Length: 195
Figure 1 (cartoon, rainbow, N blue to C red):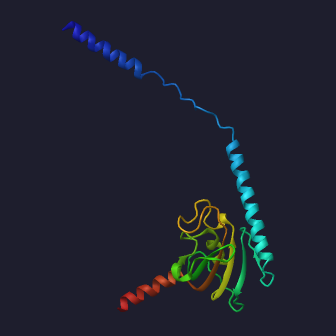
Figure 2: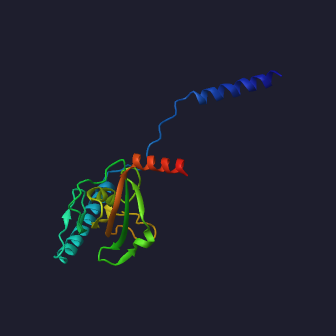
Figure 3: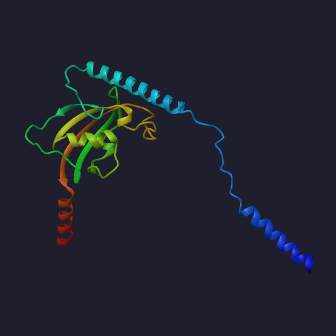
């Protein structure tokens, strides 16, 4: 019995001695010098420069169109311009639009029929980065063609369907209308109570 008790005390003592020690911090196996990040930044700069050069050549090959440079790094031209209205969609509005996506040379990737009419809650829904900004430049009933470098389109991942990695695109958008989200909710509520 004494040996058994002694054995338990020894076991508890060893357990306490081991568990009370401060564990030594684990060190990284290899240290990062930051060269990977520098290389990645350089690759991205080269990719953007290459895409901008391509887009510039597309613009120059269409002298009948006037392309405007956006502050966000894409270009656009008006197919149909609305000079009468001054309002543009902003956060809190719902934009109703149709669009088509082409490769940068103008070959169809997705038709408007495939993409269907869209209801977009401005700045509150996830859509292509370029469209998110471009729609806010438009007025009701305008049709605009955007030239988006890949970082403003589907980026590194592509759309995981027909648009590959790092592909610049051409996108033609028709803004049919836009309304305040609060007004639409009010109208829906009134319609529901009348039915």
